[in-house]
Image (cartoon, rainbow, N blue to C red; front, side):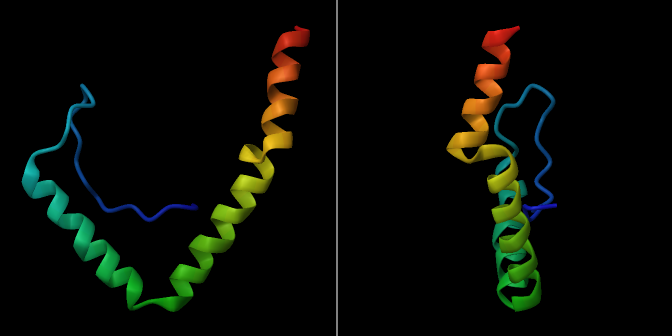
Length: 69
């Protein structure tokens, strides 16, 4: 996992969640700020995900693979 889940419950129709749900965001951020080890784990996982899937070269490989089909 390379993201922190704030636990915000969103409706199935993807509209914005009720305002009270967004209070969970600040609690999640505060908890994360108190855990440098978790910050490091998330940073490392996010960097790995980017390198493997979202770096420009990887995106180009994916698009070219679709075009070649």
